[in-house]
Image (cartoon, rainbow, N blue to C red; front, side, top):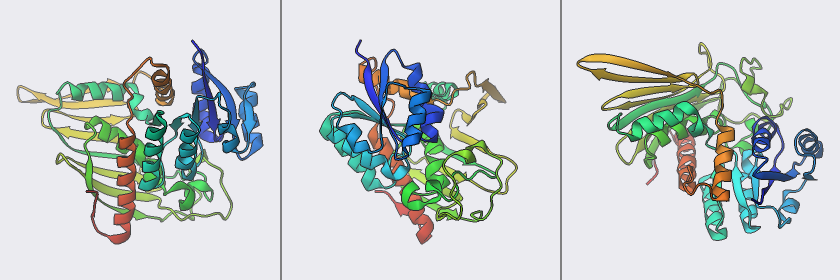
Amino acid sequence: MKKLRVGIIGNGGICQGVHAGAYLEEEERVEIVALCDIIKERAEMVQDNNFEDAKVYTDYKELLKDETIDAVDICTPNYWHSKIAVDAFAAGKHVFCEKPDAISVEEAEKMFEASKKAGKVLMVMRNNRFIDISQYAKKFIEEGNMGEVYAGRCGWIRRRGIPGKGGWFTTKALSGGGPLIDLGVHMIDLAVWLMGNPTPVAVSGATYCKFADNDASDSVNSNFGDKVEDGIFDVEDLAMGFIRFDNGAVLQIEFSWASNIEKETRFVELRGTKAGLCWDPDGLKIFTEKDGKQLTEKIEATSISSGHGENISHFVDILTGESDSPCFQPQQGIDMIKILSAIYESAKTGRQVSLI
């Protein structure tokens, strides 16, 4: 079988920490033939450590001129996701992109339209769907064991864990926002996916920035991004909100980079008419009853995988024809950015925002 020829655009932390290793695991099906980063030395480091035969670029448009490249993987700051994707589709490439899909609804829609026009695959990272306990929960719900799933809560709350302070993470023009867009994509997507992907119809929310001058950290995640002394910090460090869906279900959300809480936590809690469940990285708890007695079943996570590699492998499956059922649909990405954008709007106006 001919190997897929892939170029990785953006060779910073997420590329080095996750994507490069995932592609090395796929070396029988994928060849990384190009690396691109505006900092040449960073691309050369990924080349030296992982893909010695890959060509190095500092301009992604030059990379896209290579007609032998089948697909690109975008690992840049958020602002560039949609712009590079649209150009890649115009150049006839498939696209895998790190989350979030884009920093505005308009940009997310441009990505989707460009993919349809080119007849190419668009997939955005949704790694939490591929974790073993997430797969278990999805099957449990789809088999009807939860009954009607009508309400939930989700969050990723850090005590102290601001990434790349002063750099692109905390610069709204480049990131699109703070923990809501950085962490919210993960847990909101997992919750909505488990709920059956209902369509969001209204949101309300509030955001706060209280720790821009605090340099404390207790989270390994704060090592992401390049810190810039006296740089920009014009995003929130806490977001809370409420989402309504077209089927009547609701979802409460909370995301923070910094809050005075006991410890960092991330979770998805769903409530159904037959059962409830609570997901966290260590495992799954399922709450049911039988013969009038309340029962709690605990299912421990059996893998330490974050799901990133499995998500990339799924993208490869789709491109090679080994699967014709993509887990991610671009409309889900548009709905996600609608939610996030509307929460920021609600926080600004103090009012609920309708999405229909």
